[in-house]
Length: 203
Image 1: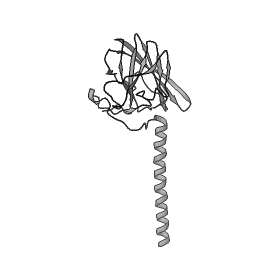
Image 2: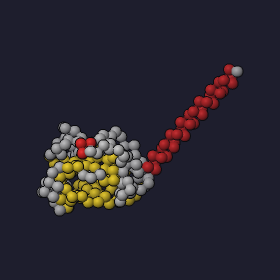
Image 3: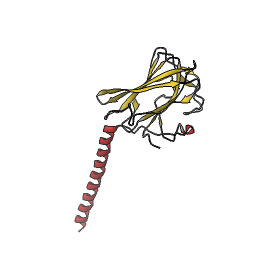
Image 4: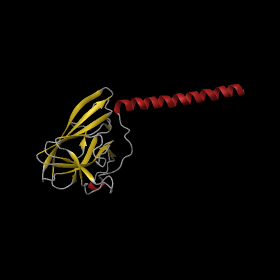
């Protein structure tokens, strides 16, 4: 009997390990297809009635001088933070995009279930427009360049609309691991700060 009990105990333990391994493998397979798992989130835009949770992107507040970002056309990090201090009251920088300038983010955590991005913007010259693109990347490189649309930016700091990839023109292809956000200004200078991504786009 002791031997039989020992064998049954070993068999149960092996089955438990196999079950855990199978569940882990399934989770890994799902994440390999849909991406995601981007870290802690916050309700950064709650004061505007947006209760969604977002994660803060790599140097999304430009406090590290735009580390990992690529700037063209005179785009640069300048002194002066958006007045809401969404990320931290210690922040003191933002991104200035002269008309015609472009800023491209580093690779950011993303996935099919990470369908929204939002930030804060102002047009120091009074008005301007900002064009948003997403460069979706998978294990084998660029999967798609997705047009997010163009927004009008006013003379006061304000949050942008949510650029949604859920049921919109921003349909991110299956297999996306990371994205790059490309911001291009026109019709006037535009200042940008505090870039956040919504992992779920649900309230």
